[in-house]
Amino acid sequence: MAIGFIGTGNMGSPMALNLINAGYSVVSFDRSDKALESIKAVNGVIASSLQELAMTAETVITMLPTGDDVRKVYENEGGVIESVADNTLLIDCSTIDVENAQIVAKKASVRGLQMVDAPVSGGVTGAEAGTLTFMVGGSSEALERSRPLLATMGQNIVHAGKSGSGQAAKLCNNMMLGISMIATSEAFTLGQKLGLDPKTLFKIISTASGSCWAMQNHLPIPGIVENAASNADFKAGFAVAMMAKDLRLAELAARSVDASTPLGDKAADLYTSFEKTGNQNLDYSAIIKHISS
Image 1 (tube, rainbow, N blue to C red):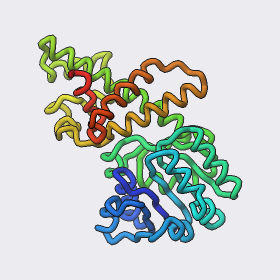
Image 2: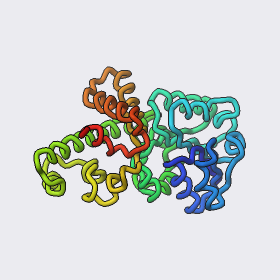
Image 3: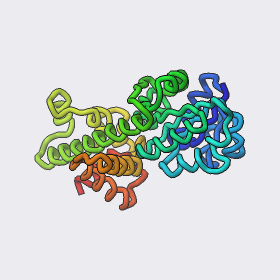
Image 4: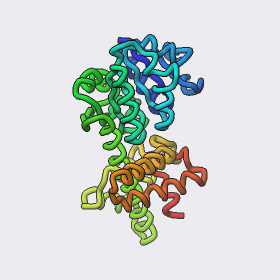
């Protein structure tokens, strides 16, 4: 199977490499030469243009920053929908707003193409290890066509529902994650100011009702949780800019269905404020710096 992979940044690159290492024929494209360095390092095939990639691929996978990027890549003249052969499978792993995901899927359907939105959870570490979780929106038939490729890049594949449902699930998940990290940061900042040893507090909360995934895996206090970004000066696994973007997307989604998300809205405000003060490239767990300042 010839796979075209578009968007080889922090997440896309290790995902594409896992497909290459599994023996798939992968052609990659990114507008940034720097983003293609890891693909070139393994002598991966690079397309000279988006149209060239689209014309040769049986499946196209995209991992792009924004909804606007996704729509341009798929919908523009010479883009994916126009250029691919009949029966090409389209898999968008970007995290974007639900509305744009549905619009692109509908335009693909008009062309007679199957498409799934399959945003991921697991960060760069999960992408590198091939342990990502895919939240998939689209038809059952399209999911089954996608499954072997998704299983090469991840461990968990969940069908969330119709087109756009993968994005909806991802936004709900990341809203919870952002809120949880803020709560963890507040609790450990308060604990330290009250004279508690962070290791003792972590031990207590780990077996108590306040425990959560964000604390257990990404504790923003160094020297306690192995592989937490706090141990490496908050080098990003999942960047502040990405969390801020996802929380703003969750806000938009909530407004579109008249849902009340006061904690999600506050989390979006805090991460956006932290992002704007030059911290966009730090790991999302660095929000403790904002909380404790």
